[in-house]
Amino acid sequence: MTVKEILAQLKTLGNEQVSLRNAKNGAGDNQFGVKMGDIRTLAKKIKTNHELAKSLWETENLEARLLATLIIIPQNLSSTEIETMVSAATFSWLADWLNAYVVKEHPDKEALRQKWMFSNDIMVARAGWNLTAARVVRNPDGLDLPGILDRIESEMPNAAPEVQWTMNSTLAQIGICHSQYRQRALTIGETLGIYRDYPVSKGCTSPFAPIWINEMVSRQKT
Image 1: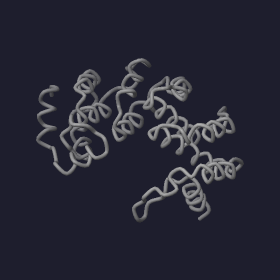
Image 2 (image 1 turned 45 degrees about the vertical axis):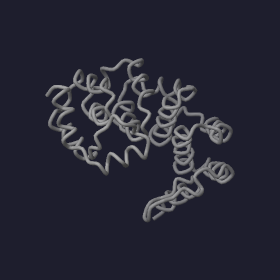
Image 3 (image 1 turned 180 degrees about the horizontal axis):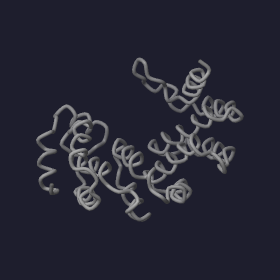
Image 4 (image 1 turned 30 degrees about the vertical axis):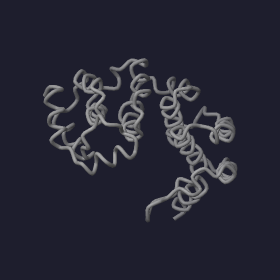
């Protein structure tokens, strides 16, 4: 399939309600409102195609970029290319797909994580903290967890909302996965109060770090 054919197909899959929801959440106008499941189905038909994915990304269309994250080959991207993509993914749902399917699979992700955690680019910093949260869970050896908590305590109150979200994830994961730092993580979360009043659907866990930590720890004990 060509880029033109894919865009035409995505357009036919568009849903007005999805488009309105996307716009409400900051997606912009270059989108069709395609359901995530339909994008995944199309990706399965196309399969991996690195050059096509890069061309789709260049269209700046939301659904084309979401599709690109599913069919691109992360290992074939240079560090510069991947950082440029991360910086451009300003819609949070696109950023999440890019981080999950591309960034976390990149061979230089640790070097990028260390660099990105100090970036002035909001989306790049968001990705850096997202990688840190993942490493706290899966590969914490060598991480300066007390130093990370220091940064969260001092920087999260004034961080951009996009960065706050993944900093908060890092805080919560430290509290959940590392009992020796749990009380400090709880104290930081309680003192900062970020997401204390965040609206949560029935059955979902609050992103407020103390609630999140205590809920996950209680599940580990059952």
